[in-house]
Amino acid sequence: MGGVLALTRTPVVSGWFTETAADGGFRLLGTRCSACTAVFFPREDAYCRNPHCPGGGELAEVPLSPRGRVWSYTDGRYRPPAPYVSDPAEPWEPYTLVAVELEAEGMVVLGQAAPGVGVGDLAVGMEVEVVGGVLNEDADTRTAWTTWRFKPVGGDA
Amino acid sequence: MSADVAVLGAGMHPWGKWGRSFVEYGRAAARAALADAGLDWTDVGSVVGADTVRSGYPGYVAGATFARALGWQGARVTSVYAACASGAQAIGTARAQILAGLADVVLVVGADAAPKGFFAPAGGDRPDDPDWLRFRVLGATNPAYFALYARRRMAVYGDTREDFALVKVKNAAAGTLNPNARYRKAVSAEEVAASAVVADPLRLLDICATSDGGAALVLTSMDFARSRGIGDPVRIRAVSTVTPTYPRTVLDLPDIATDSAVAVRPAAGSFRASIARAAYEEAGLGPDDLSLAEVYDLSTALELEWYEDIGLCGEGEGAKLVREGATALGGRIPVNASGGLASFGEAVPAQAIAQVCELTWQLRGTAGERQVPGARAGITANQGLFGHGSAVVAVR
Ligand SMILES: [Zn+2]
Image (cartoon, rainbow over all chains, first blue to last red; front, side, top):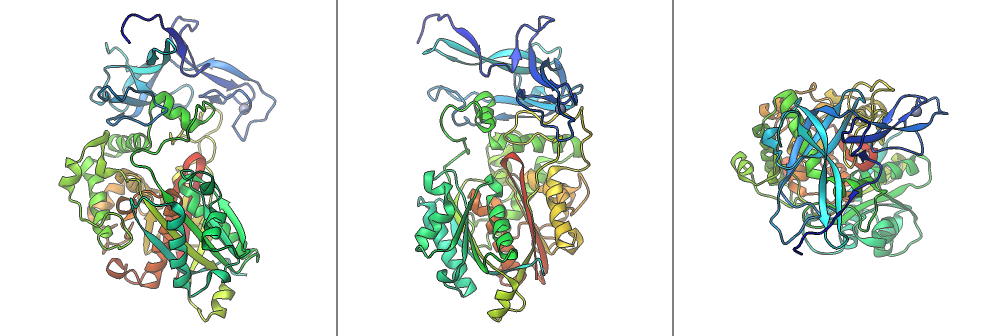
């Protein structure tokens, strides 16, 4: 395409994260059931999935912990099929996937690592933080699809 | 009333990339199973098809599709879908119909014509589908999840890539002895190590391929089997079809996150272990009674996890079993004597049925060069997307 396009930043999925949390940081957003305290990510807005929930609660939006520890990680050395967006004319650049344990929520969340973070930079148990990033840019619709990424705490990647 | 049903017939269409319709594979497998049972298609009172999502409308109504291909004859018909557990759910449905007295002879068929490369979600823009979302947002393929489990084992139990390769070497060796397998060539640990990394730490030869294939079973009531003069058939004694329990704390495809454990304490043991436990309870036997097992080796590392989940060893001890040769043909408890998915590849609705075909041949003592001597009891275990878990126990 060439040229500098003014891209509109749009979350790849709406309501799953915010770039303007109360403390100014990037946060994943889940929901919490007021009746049983269960947390859901991706967010559940219609019903609580805890079978032991007393019921009658409300599902309120809640930011998830900004940091967690690596549960496991891998990468994708081959181009994944659609609907993953990648340019078949470009050489494939492997991405890294990280599964992160969030202690306060008692859950594991999967995400891509920040650009430049490879499997050699990670270890199970390592502390990571969530940051914002761009999943892909669509010149036709002038959209930068934003997403969440994990990167080692204190790393410059 | 006995809760057993008899396996009178087992049949397959050889697996591979044949480029034909799933209907053709299913029909061939069905005819092979009927011939094996010594029964005609017109003797069948009910047909249960395991669905494939990759062949459009006929795939979604597999039961009737196979019935049409065999020739409409008015049988009761059922079509079931549970991703990788579809075949086991089809067997469970057939068994329930027999035990309920709805049919004496039930034909179970599963067949698929798989695409090359990664499985992908159904087409279209569908952000309400978790399976679509994991690809769109993360590019998280099935092998990526298998690799997460493999890496976790390395970190927690000290498993190595060499341990994983041993599983492939073992299963490929068994596959050389199976005429229905797609791959019938021995594989060395060096060949596994030299294959390309797909999702670190897993390599191409650690991950099962996609295949075409078909498998079928003829199941009957014990009374029907006796009426045909078969007093000692292979019997299906249990079919478990359990869901996980909340909170599910191990990340599983296609999910992007686990359940939260803050509200409810997680149950002891894994979901996969609960699948086998339910089957053992129903069958009234345990891991010590097994002669062999067929488990889903979608990846080499995953097979090690199944050893622990079906109770062949304690948690974290799976690699030790494969190192000792305990799970190889000739070992204490052979696992994937058929060659497993490593040798067959995935033909999703057929594979859980194929596992029971293998148990049937082994328990009859007709498995040829891969025969487990004196086999008396076996378990199969598999897992489908979205919380479908199934295991089948067969005895002789
Ligand atoms: Zn609740």
